[in-house]
Image (cartoon, rainbow, N blue to C red):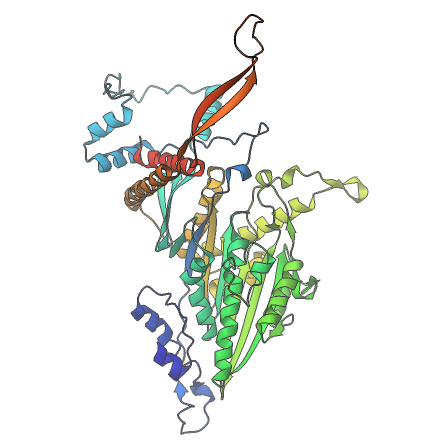
Length: 577
């Protein structure tokens, strides 16, 4: 790798992002002809050492890398509460009967009959199969099955809706990780991706997994794109930029909170300084735009409109009409802060700093060495979050009365509609690419027109799917994981789900032991003395009017106790007991 860097001026990341050094070297070896003059442009019959002919570049097939990141669970005080201030209990999730029996058989290595007895055993002394004495008969085909009444049918649908709940069962982090979910209608389903980040993963781990290799490809002359997809409030902006504007523009320092964008900016600028010292002429252009419905605004020009006619905005953006040249870290930081100040943001019930539009940060890099040149584009997109208007609270906002007495929807509601329409068009394009259709509907929305080159062109793409492990948001997380699975074209069989469940049980057992050891280390008994006035005291009683009540309680490990209850509930789901 170092020899490629010295001889061919190939940019080599500090940390290898490929599984093995052979794969990493093979990936970089494809860029060895980056600064060689193409054969079509050589006019002399003899070539010098620095101007050798390069073979024609082979166009690679479309490939999308998919990573999944789970948002950390918020503290108890920050969760949604009912009017009495109590947090609603999480719904009980029950696996399908066949999967529960299979898990019990694998765990206890027993027969199907023994597994049924274990499943329906109510106590240690009671070992009875409730179906052993059941009167089962085969109905004659001529008999007409009784039709349930409307009340019975509606009651059955209501019970089914209350019992069948989606939930995140286990998250296996790392390369080739997976997210195991309980899906209504099919039970356990394992979603495998190129990389999975659990609730404790840092920003640096996310960047090193896949985006860093794409940034290196961009510096080596290949187009690249990274975008985040998920529910509103699931951590897309946090992953792409950071928790606030300062962290999102930390291109000069080493802020641990910085997301993919500032880390990519820092690496690009440092690599370009090395290229300049090696005699390469470098021009870096930055474009920062926001997509709101069919309108595209320039965030670096105080939100001015880009392209007033259909089909013109995305061409103007990629043509560089609203691009700004960047030479150093200070200038780029100022541009990022300026663009962040003109973003659409608003507080909803799902997110205090909710992005109300899609934002795209584009880098266009021109590198010249002699007669050879390389042009590449890097697209970093922070998509608006898909949301249910009833859950986010924007549908409950009052509509204003416009001209002519017509009601006009609130601004938050219109923003949610525009975001969801753009994401729906994006899903349609992904489905068309997955099914190898001849027509991909990029023109259905301005968002897909802007991402057309990233999705189906000569570009390496990485999708970061964000989700939440909380039960109230499990259905939205399931939809986001399905979208990521469509992007990666991964199909997981039911047998793999059971194997993943067994691995998850072992991981949960190990984590439960660690939490229990932490509880034993932290927990202690505390004596509490409470004084109260004895209202029923008689005048002739020998006791005092004030009495003291002494109680003892366990303190010091409240958070660990709550985490242990969560782990035990997940284990109960997997074991089927």
